[in-house]
Amino acid sequence: MTDLRMAILTEITKDRDNEIVDKDLIKEAIFQFIYMGFEKKTAIKKTNSGDWSWVGEKNLIIYDQDFESHLATATLEYYRQKAEVWT
Image 1 (cartoon, one colour):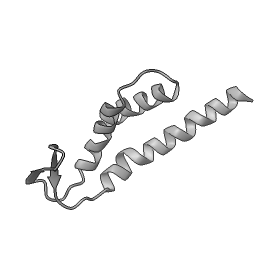
Image 2 (spheres, helix red, strand yellow):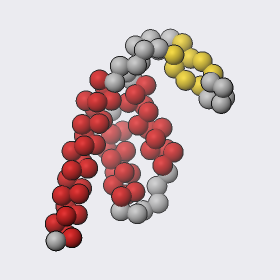
Image 3 (cartoon, helix red, strand yellow):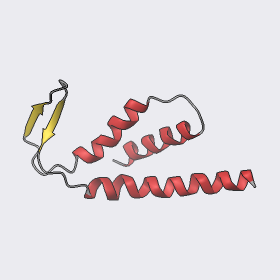
């Protein structure tokens, strides 16, 4: 999970620095943290758009603790460093 989080945060930093990144891949990688929080992972259904998705109750604790809190910290640090350069 740590490797996934670090890879996502690296790609987000690249995007902030105007480097070319695959935003769809970043989005799908972030969804992995959300998918980890499904309570009932036994059912998969096909949506109207033709995509497959888990059916179950979402629990965003894993997303919150293992990704979002790190994203917030990385974002704060990124813009803190940029502010030092801009001033």
